[in-house]
Image 1 (cartoon, rainbow, N blue to C red):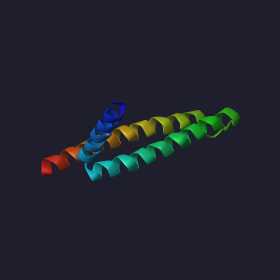
Image 2: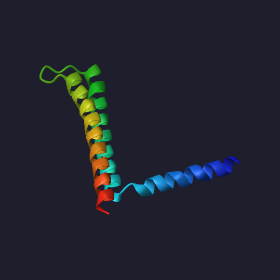
Image 3: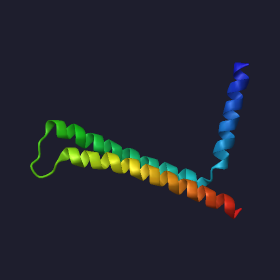
Image 4: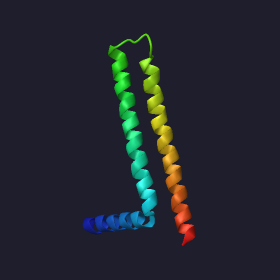
Length: 92
């Protein structure tokens, strides 16, 4: 019984992934990687700001900017992927 349910879940996941266009998957992959890298850089600057004081650059503000922009970029990339997927489906 449990194995049947797992197979059904796997089949529905595969069907869902097949419905998404290739271009949307590529956009999501690239945007996700960019967003993760920016978030890691933001975390690095935040940790650096705890141990280092700079009179030229406020590292906490820089870290906050990187973290916020990583979220914004991911949301915009998600919107672009949805739009491309919609356009690919309406084209056919």
